[in-house]
Length: 298
Image (tube, rainbow, N blue to C red; front, top):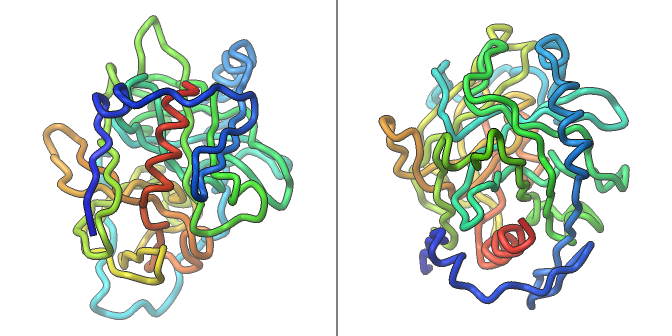
């Protein structure tokens, strides 16, 4: 299977898509839903998420507790100082205040995040989530790179219409801060598609505080495997609720704190119903087209 790197220069050179207020069709499965957030509302979201509000938020997904009995050969994630390009994504919806994990991904606009689609939109509730902010390298209430309000969300229409597990990937754009774009402040992973099933990745995410009251990110490195035609799996303990959207990063550079994102926790069972086995949709050409739509609309 071919491997395609979606570099900023490549995205910049692509023919722009025709802007549409809600969706655009670009062939194949690629029909995309786009929603915009008023920038004034974004500023209110940043003010809304005080340290106390963040501390009381709960995971948006259901993997709230560690599961007993993972096979002995499966490793466990450890605490990490985090990564500048990975952070907590705080949001609210009809059930309260929640969080996922998201990461900065390279694009010509230098303002994009990638996460799981279920962190942005609920097919059962037929609604986009609200008050979204991204906090890079969040740890124990600290926000070393500030709080970045989300103003644009882009998801595959297959997720919007019926929660297709193979389309549980989405992009979001964040506002500038002090005249600077987020990738210029913290850097960005590069998006990599069509890598196949066998990869070696580092996964960084924000687990449930019910299991990890220290409120710090965790990290684990290991191989990926084929689960289904359009799904990958990754085995490592500790990835409880809150880690949805966690990037699967190949060739992670500890000094630069970035690499190539080839997956996110999501997809089958919204990423898995145990803490020790996680899933991701396979990043294919549809994901590449979704990235192009996000970059164009941003």
